[in-house]
Amino acid sequence: MEYKLLGDSFQIKELNDTIKQVAPANISILVTGESGTGKELVANSIHFYSTRKNKPLIKVNCGAIPEGIMESELFGHQKGAFTGAIEQRKGYFEMADKGTIFLDEIGEMPFGTQVKLLRVLETGEFMRVGGDKNVNVDVRIIAATNRNLAYEVREGNFREDLYYRLKSINLNIPPLRERKSDIVILFNYFIENFTKENNIEFPGITEEAMEYLINYVWSGNARELKNFCESIIILNNGKEITIEDVKKNLKQEIFDNRALPALTAQKVETNYDKDLIMRAMFELKTDIMELKQAIGKMSDFKVKAPYDLNSDFYIPKEIIKTMSLEEIEKEILLYFLKTFDWNVSKVADKLGQTPRNIYRKIKLYNIEKS
View (tube, rainbow, N blue to C red):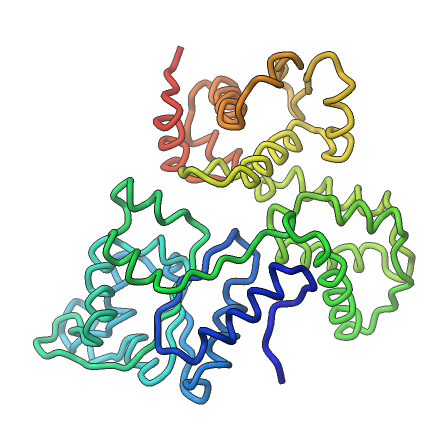
């Protein structure tokens, strides 16, 4: 059995080759990439090709563990260390001894816990919560994040020394929009698996519909594509998938908050900024394929919001051509702030973000209430 990411793009081929090169070495690895690109699959592959493949691979979602029990979960605790600690308990690091631990969403780890993690990386030892003796472990650490950790370091949210210690090797998974040739391969893989598991007949998909999928902006990447494949099969059981079927299904995704633009509190790459803006335009009830054609033809960019606001989001064509992506994003954020009367919680909910991220973006763009 061979572990590798699916795709025939040069980016994925290069990534699979690099994984095989670095896997045997006992070195920490940072896996980066947007949500849904397959960071856990990379961790699985690294462990499989490492000398630790017959030892445990412990997976930990740092974003799912409450801050108050993070250290206990990772490093264990002694009996009586806190209320409810009725017995000694091993943490994930002890469970992973001689094997690998995968720390997903490492950017969510509390600052205090980061100090303890750094000590494990440097010395291989730690103390259980409430303990007075060092515990030694031999664990390879693979961390993953969809955050820009360099930005988080500058903002004081992530330790600089831990960042560079984790980043001995950085494997970045490119988003689907940068490797469109992989979309067909992933689509066929997801469809084949789902139809076999559920004994469903799949007559196929039209060429026009597939072309639309290839050019669609998959903000959720492979995970979003997989969910789309499963839903489109169920909703169109036994019939050939047409472009109308695809558009109908994707419009449902578009107006779900999860598909709205991720106005994250970090400086991101230009291509990702383009994606954010496109998704924001989707929220303003515009189809992405039609939008690309329309911007070149329309005298103005004017889109009616999908709910009753008694106002439009409006940027004249001659002005939008001169604006940077950051300026456009600022205008979009300002639009929603004014729409919801500067209720940051409502804006965050509408954009699928945390209020903290919205406040950061307001500060980044120096937006003032008028």
